[in-house]
Image (cartoon, rainbow, N blue to C red; front, side):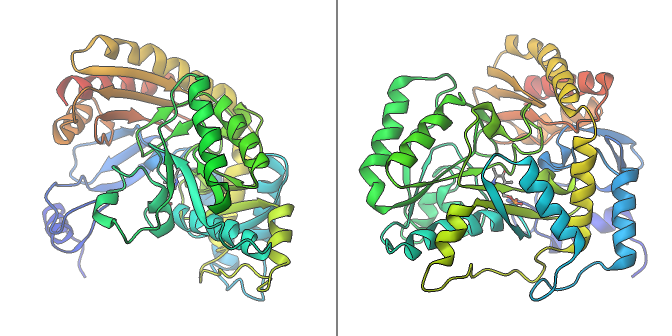
Length: 426
Ligand SMILES: *Cc1c(COP(=O)(O)O)cnc(C)c1O
């Protein structure tokens, strides 16, 4: 096929290609990206570059086209891109598992490498259900979560997404019915903690696990909550024989100002999912970590194996880049960079609080959120950001940013200006 012009490409895209949460044929014209480098996306229509305020959905923490990650990919490519993981193993996967075990909260010892965040959540759920089955308690098969969460788009993850955001009405009687409590308030409230304890106790006989995003709820509404609730969950889960799963797919690898958000409360989960920034945004890979208690439990069962094995499990290319990305992160003073971005976003987004239609401005770590009191006009808001030279992807009533950690102060200020412009015009 000859090279496509931008209009040809857009026409074929509209006719044939699904985009996230998109209609078919497409109705909104996407921007065509030709290349990306550092924190900039270069557009194919010749209109120039945009500073990326999204890190390609939390993932590109080191920016694009990074020489160290490129070298890791190139080096691995010349050894092997992929070999099957059944009966074979290789250094990139083993090194990655060891890095994850060493850096993650205490007690997480075993690593299942999955191909995407949603699959890692499926695996986490399977681990928990299988654990109780192995222990002779097969009735423990439901999950409890709080509202406002997001855990992915495949079946089990969908069932614990916020019922509205996850369009549960469309799936009544089809999705597994999970137990929901209200959304966690930002500050600690004893009455809410009591509600958590009471729900876990009431449903203990049928609960396999509680699953939540610690401290920051991402795509379910970009809300922050007191880390103290994690301790409440840990204690209630321990008291009532329920496992605790932390979905750190968005929050992991430093984004909130801790390597993992669970550290804000020093609460270790039984199972933890990571993804998104795992490979520095280079390719898709995720992981489910669990404790020895969970692994041993599964191993004592009638079926003593974890029956899950994706074709591309442990993909060497992705694992090699993930190792390089983690070493790059840990080899620098990442916390200072995240705090620097936090300060820049606080400064730059302060102006948004006074805008008409703005409900709340919140910043935590390298995450900035402006919540409107109305549904955002996505087209107007995105275009306002693009006029400021910035790529943002607002949704629902939210205009938000989580820039790469390498974003310089001037670019952080520019991103904040773009968020304000989008809030004004969206
Ligand atoms: C993005 C996300 C997922 C799903 O990951 P995919 O790689 O998109 O399947 C799950 N949980 C959380 C918290 C996420 O942010």
